[in-house]
Image 1 (cartoon, helix red, strand yellow):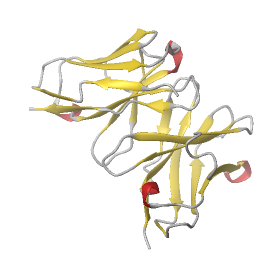
Image 2: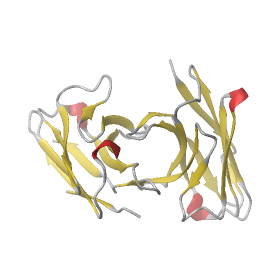
Image 3: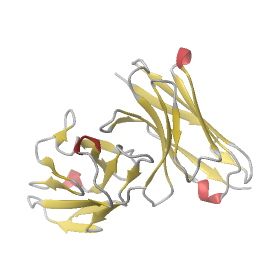
Image 4: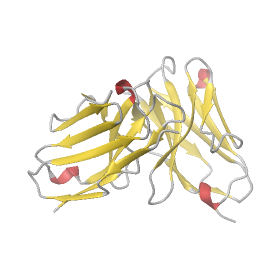
Amino acid sequence: DIVLTQSPGTLSLSPGERATLSCRASRRITIRSLAWYQQRSGQPPRLLIEGASNRATGIPDRFSGGGSGTDFTLTISRLEPQDSAVYYCHQLGNLPQTFGQGTTVEIK
Amino acid sequence: QVQLQESGSGLVKPSETLSLACTVSGASMNNYFWNWIRQAPGKGLEWIGYFSYSRSTNYNPSLRSRVTISADMSKNQISLRLSSVTAADTAMYYCARSSFSAADLWGHGTLVTVSS
């Protein structure tokens, strides 16, 4: 199985700051099969980024994804209070599909 | 508007079989993968398996011996059966539509508790 390791575990930042979240894969994965999700408390995950860098429909351009091979990042520029959530990376290209353990973003 | 709605037994006794259904409304089931994903309380996401548009299935090896995912395309519904459940199977169960690049649509989830 491909293990996805997310770091840091928790980010505590102020509104307007920039958040950089990391997702490292135990083996190389194809760019098109790496996604990022936001999960607010009590809600299902919401797709933010697919294909490593393509924003999903309706996602503001404050959210951006990048990376390749084994190292991927999600950047949230200009944090807003509603960005408080857990963020997961997900690889679909190698079965079984796997998720990272999540990064919690707290807004001060 | 495409929606996914999970339904099924919220309380299952240990050693029994968990049965859930996911109804797809507003779209065809063709050309996508239809996944079951679960999340234990306070934990991360675990992929259980999928039923694909080509009528094939694929399961997480960690659950393969206990899982069956099937579909009734005429009813736009996918089903999950998980046998011999234990407390470790207590979780929120989500159905989700995916392509090769992402799970773009999720149901709200249904909480299943395993307890006698």
